[in-house]
Image (cartoon, rainbow, N blue to C red; front, side, top):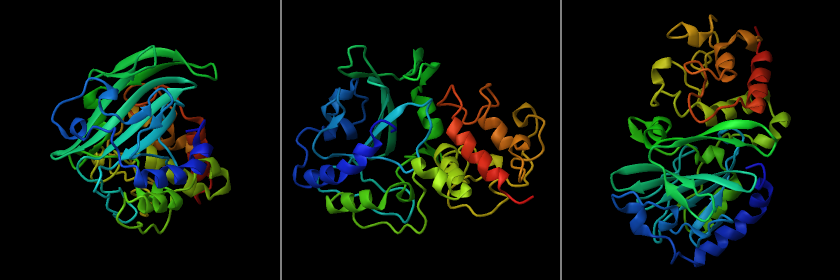
Length: 331
């Protein structure tokens, strides 16, 4: 996101407008909706130029206001809605994408493409599949078993990067025991993008969004609670909500949650132990260093680290935002 977000904000209106009339001879609807698992990313036809990540007609780039952290990877996100179909607005929550739709997300470091994850909306629900880019950077191959390998980020930091296996994709994308998208909630998309998407014929109506997640690059300019809550919504709430995989924790870190106890403020953990770091409360007002939530965000040890998968490093900007929020709470 950091390398191309500004250009995307300028270009997305033109892209969406062009796609309104150039409905998609390239994308393979059969590859999306069939029961199989295409062995190569190119089998879908999502890109006119895959190496340059230029989408095919009918495939629309988007960005999130506040994204999920994945070891500092840049991410390019795309959505495809089949011809003659429209996504349905669902308040400020997830867009309801019709059968035949796809969400595509490519991870890269600098110029090197690492992986592309696809979410396919099939008749029986969503299917999540990971693809690993080859060394020649010409295509990505299905990686059902995932992968872990060493790489060096453009900033010089060596990391152990993990591509999730198919089951791990399900772990994060689980809602009511079924696979579901995480990112494209109306509250985490700009009003401008949503308006362009609707004008392009891909969305039935403008979603009603009372309070939008702030733009991450502008976090220092907004209320500490909004910056931190936006980060928690994108990085933690897909599991920590009443319908998610971590519902038994008693934490609901969703953007719309207003109950302080559900947010962990003054709340004792459901299970004490090493994961709690011998601390007593999930969030201690005024004291991030004695808050379990902050402790687990900053830890990389298995069984303690939160989020559990998807990172091998700590997000310093996320830590700063959450610490600021906790420090500003009244004791």
